[in-house]
Length: 245
Image 1: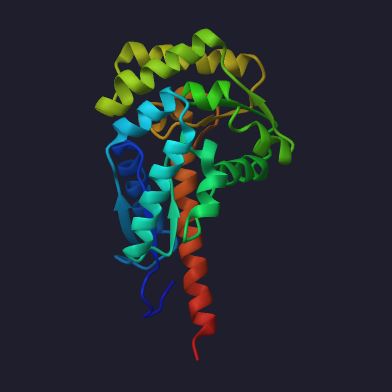
Image 2: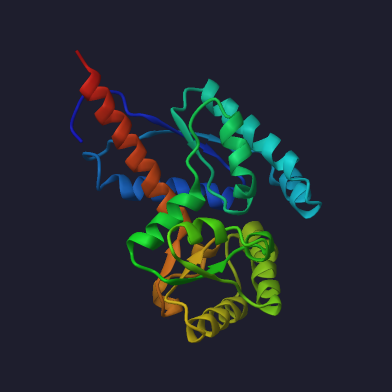
């Protein structure tokens, strides 16, 4: 897009640092497809300490999670963000409450990912994420709206994924070879059980899993959200051009 207008500002309400950093990197990467060289959307990041949010999740205090994210988004709005994204799947348990209370638009990762799965004609999609995302069937309703069947790992597999996320990926932004092998065994079992794709429904999982090593389309929810943020930026710029006297 070639014009002299100011770029829109994407507000990122960070939950974990690895997830937020990965999202920023992907916004930069995908921006090359939509903007001329060296032009990028403005980015405002609010990245509070993850510990209180994590403790609230463990204690099922989802109103606390919502309050913390709304506070982040309000801070982003005050700093000039035109809209916000949340590069974390689990906290979308409270996305409806967040959207109602936020003073700027907040993109819904669940709907965006489900629409992408629908557009790529997926029928049965495996969901890998935190135990709250998996056992809570976070993607079930948005999948059902577009005719997709959700497949969830077994209890034992969920334990493997949960341990990988919170013992390795979030604190270290990497995982041991043994852990990666365990994750890939989960993916293979789900593929053999009829999945035609999986979604990496924790923003740290793409650090170690991808379509190549999974042997099945592995949809990166962070990448999908980043692309949606760019599309919204382009929409806002186009709207601004159309309204220009």
